[in-house]
Amino acid sequence: MNTPNRRHALLALAASLPLLAMPAAAQAEFPKQKPITLVVPFAPGGGNDILARAIAPRMGQLLGQTIVIDNRPGAGGNLGTELVARAAPDGYTIVIASSQVTMNPFLDMKVPFNIERDFEPVGRLASVPIVLVSNPQEPYKTLQEFMAYAKANPGKLNYSSPGNGTPQHLAGEVFAKLNKTEMLHVPYRGTGPSITDLIAGQVQVSFATYASVSQHVQAGKLRALGVAGQKRTSLMPELPTFGDAGMTNYDASLWYSLLAPAKTPPAIVAKLNEAMAGALKDPAVAKQVAAQGFEVQSSTPAELREYIAKELKRWERVIVDNRIKVSL
Image (cartoon, rainbow, N blue to C red; front, top):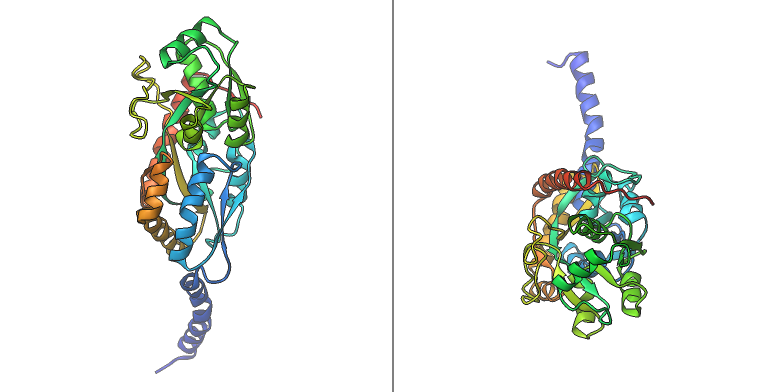
């Protein structure tokens, strides 16, 4: 027998069911409502941009929706990344983030978001070596010659990067500390203009992703001197590492991931991760990504969350120990 109180409870439950079902329905429909925006927080031509444009078409096919690339450079990647942190958590705005998101919190710069609090990890994408390249007119032809020249000429070398606080910038700063020398950092708004000025001779060297300079090295416009880490790249196996040159504690490899705004529903994050993994497994995409020097490193959202936590600890130690400061 239904009492008045029981009837009221049943009516209240029945009235709430449509409200409870609405989010689930919206998640089931994702991403049918509109195109997905993939924010690249750097100018065209850099590693983030190259990788985003390689995976976006196939991801879009798998999701049944167009993915639009939106380049938002500035503030060492913080500008575009903040845009996504403040976006609606509906899966329609995501960002391709690289190692800078675990470095910037410890630099002398304002970071307008918390990478662990304000984002839902979607998954790791790939990693790519950072290489030291020089204008071919410079006197040093090998990594050992460059290291000796830099040490003998403190303050006389200019090196470019895609911007303050980027992994490429940190690669240069840490190298200078370990090599006991000084180099002048020249920040640009993205890899494209940074490499253009290097080719033109406006700066002498640059720390850059292999993906962004390989074509210029092959064309003889730039000279590759070494890999900024301990592991050689299979695409240029003859290129020595800084470890080969004696810097056994130096590693500045670069990794990439996809992030969504915090509170994006797990079902939507799972769909994005599935499409990302599917795109990376596609033979045509895999070939394109490998040709640019990327090593695929797909992961689950949980694995990316754990990796970000480890990288935050690592870069805090590197930046604090080397007393690196960046002012924007």
